[in-house]
Image (cartoon, rainbow, N blue to C red; front, side, top):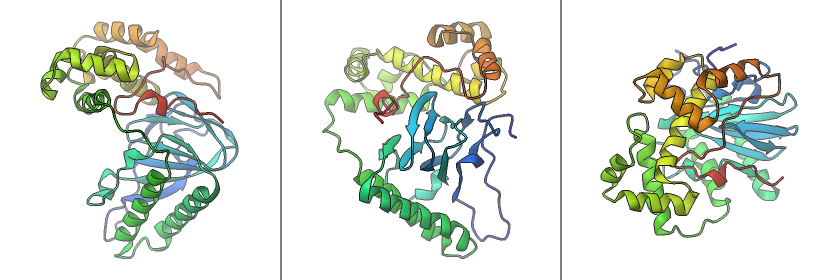
Amino acid sequence: MHSSGQLPPVPVDAALPFPVEIDTLALADLAGDPGWRRPVLVEKDLLVLTTGGHGDAELDFQPLPCRPGTLLRVRAGQVLRCPCPQLDATVVRWDATALGGLDVDPDAVPAWRQLAGEDEDAVISEVTQLAVDCVRHRAMPAARALLRHQLAVLLLRLTLTAEARPASRPEEVTFERFCREVERGYRHSRRVEDYAARLGCSVRTLTRACLAVTGRSAKQVIDERVALQASRLLAATDEPIARIGRGLGFTEPTNFGRFFTREVGMSPGAFRAARDNAPAGRVVRPRPSAEPGHPRPQLSRPRA
C-alpha cells in the first residue's frame, strides 16, 4: 500500500541496456490501496482500455462511465480513482520523453472515448501487441524503438478516429494560449495582468476569450486551476496542508484556507477529513471545474 496515493516508480532493471520508458500493467496495479479509497496522483501519461465490467472511473473527481471498449486518456498530474472492483482494464504508461522526435500529439486524444466496431478491434489489437512486446522484447536493444513507434501508432490512430473538431475561433486560440501560460505559472501568480503581459494582450482580451469559451472570467479560470491542484494534493497525498499552500504561492496558511473554502466549498482540513472518512466506494468531490488546456466538455459525463 502506498499511503501517499502516488504511483510507485517503474522498477529499474539494471540488466536492461536502456531505461524503461513505456510499460503496460493491469488497472488494479495502479491502486494506492485495494479499495481505491483515495484517488491516485498519476506521475506518467496513461491510456486505460477497459476490457471487462461496468462502472465509473473518476478522473480529476469527475465520474466517467466505463464498459468494455472504453478508453481513458490520463495526463501526468491528474488524479484517477476506479473504485469498481468488477472493472478490468489494461493500462499503457509512458514517460514524457518516450515520444520525443515523433510527430504525434498525445493531448489530441480525448479524455474519454467509447470505442466500437473496427476502431475498437484495431485499438485492442495494438494495445495487446504492445503489452506482449513490453515483456517479450524487453531486453533487446531494438525494443525501445519498437515500443516508441507502437505507442505513436496507437496515439495517431486514436487521434484520427476522434470526432473532427471545428476550426478554432480567435477566442479559442487566445484561450488555449492563456491556458498554456496558466499551466506554467499558476503556482507563482494568480494575477490576470501577469498573463496578459506574457501574451502581449490586454486583460479585457483574455477575459473576453475565457467568457466566450467557458462562461468564466480569466481570474476564475486561474483560481479554478489552483483549486484543482490543491484538491488533487489533498485527496491523493498526505502532504501537510500548509506545505501544499506554500507550493501554490500562499505565504500564509490562513490565506490558502480562505481561498480553498471559497473555491471548493469547504476548508482544506474538512476536504481531507471527508476523504479519509468516506465509506468505501465513495469519495468527496470538489465543485466541478475545468483544467486549463483541457476544457470542461472533455471531462463532463459522456452519454452511455
